[in-house]
Length: 506
Image 1 (cartoon, rainbow, N blue to C red):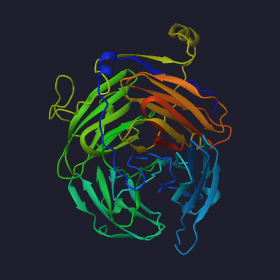
Image 2 (image 1 turned 45 degrees about the vertical axis):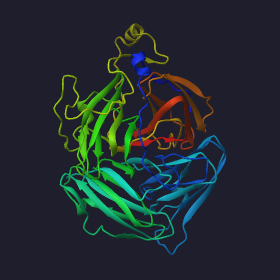
Image 3 (image 1 turned 135 degrees about the vertical axis):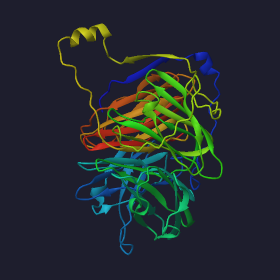
């Protein structure tokens, strides 16, 4: 991977007020069996579960691995015929390093959810899947709760929605699925006791079960055994998939859109009481704190068109007084049904229904300045470009979705860079703290580049474009900072668009 020009959003952000801001307190979702952190790896051996992967005549896919230390990894793809042996591949990965395994090199038989087991760590896994007409990808999960929350389902006209239930364990599982829509909460008919045999999966077409819904969230509760669920949304142009999560009082989205896509935020709350939520934006012109604030009623999911708050692109932080579920979805303008009800605003543009949580990462009054590494002055640019046709920036069409990061950390692993042929890849880094972040970007895999240091001022984000690789699919990045940050990845091309959360490792 060549050294790339890095767009650094530089700002003067009211440093005194920033420094006096206390860190945001939150409780990450409980993922129980290995770690309490969403997607967090540990130094212990770990298994990663990737529920939505397929390879066949039309689709290609890959399991993307990255590790800080030397590890042995075993990829296991259960056979759809439970009487047959699973397929698999063993891999040795020298750390720090990254490698992607083509699913089709293991087996091509359509749906191929899998398990990646490491003998040491920190080591992480993501997945990516593409064809000529779609592109999607997910962060695999390292541990599993008894209750999963899946936010952002749509069964309106023009959409198809599937629920994938993957049981990677030997024991059979029995689960209950409940829907949360604008009409309240209710068990789905026929979904009260779904049996998923060991080492198998079930795909349910929710568009047939609950059609014509603009906004639906789901809970998947294990009555016995454990499953890993994923929602798969298709609008006839592209496909987006995202795994279930827990609920959290803080969600960070380092990226919410790419050029051509409009971002929406979906929030959902279960239980008997509502949530008071504040939304902070981090734009190229600086942070907009409390850009939106509202109550999220229990059992009534909310979809917010973020483009009504500021001009994309920007990063987002969701703060809530009680745990909620949150997902970012992005598509061309007009893609998503409008279900948002805006509360009355005060003179500052914030909601007045209730006071929003006060743990702010930045002072509201700020100014910013944007610089591009290696650029000439604006006068020089004007002279050079005089009489020339300006180059049209690339605009993408597609559908993307991603759960947020529930925790900011100082070290992140990002595998699978450059895995999709012909697509553009970027790593997005959000610094929501009150201190300047010194970030070291260490290429992994086939790249021979040395680590590069960049500075990210308080309350801003950084996009790191990744150049195409000479050897597709064996690249990643280790991102290390002196303050807690949040990381995500975008893959965008003629096939479609995918958002994939980074994996924090401490």
